[in-house]
Image (cartoon, rainbow, N blue to C red; front, side):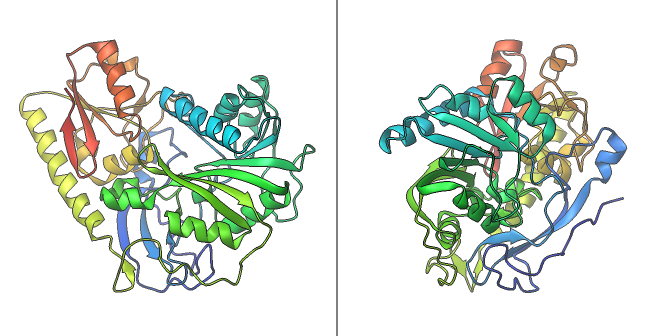
Length: 407
């Protein structure tokens, strides 16, 4: 029995407050109810599905779901934080930020630091690193790792963060898109910064989703879908000037900002809205077409493997993997989902009910093919598959609107 929780509870834009209207851009059936609240039983997991409605604000252009946030939106739960790909990216970003803006010796605050994966990378630089995290057990893990982390959250504009402020720089990595009140979060952070404080922010890119027709990138945890234009509008509305914009890791927007203190709460929406507008709305027709196309392609792949009496697994207990396995024929043809994050292992994927296993499970439960569904980590995962199991496993990956085989 499918959940209908938290659907259609919000009528106004999260950022500018304009009415969203009654006709959504896109309706999506049988989507995973969450990306991080992963059930312990197969039966529970199969029931963890919801129907979602995607809207575009007519005021500021921001694309967003009309549902309430997941109940753990204050917590930062990362599975790829210690991957080589992410460590190298954060190292490059930190080096550029510190050297270009002469931030040596300054106080850095990561708002939503999880167990301190990215904060630990920062400690190798000549700055003072602090972090806040809402989830208590993650705070304890970070502290045991020697990091300056406290349990806290940016719930109110007038909230004082810790005892080390004001801070010179804030960091926010793929956290803003979870927030039901992003303006409150930004105002709170701003009030805890020095007069000319700076920030580094990343969020998933809606441009990337549209360019690749990646409907599987949509997940209820991410209630907002930013572009450079809508992210800039939000930041400028809350007293931050955007100094630099960059697309990183193929699918993520990264911006460097400076506090100006001059809010533009009454400013008009940017002339260029979230995405290309077609008759006043974002053109998401490619997302719908790609869902049908991918389902057909994955059905053909599954049928061909079955005819040869061969088996397949998916690598990636991510929101992409959960969405694909819940909404396509994969749920009926995949043996299990592989993931390196211990907190996901031994559980079951919401929507599909597929078991999530560690990589070493494959050795004793070998499959003939593995489909990698982890954008940004594909090459790293493929290299590990070849290193651990040689050439005996056929490696496939998802490339926007099609499945490709890796040599």
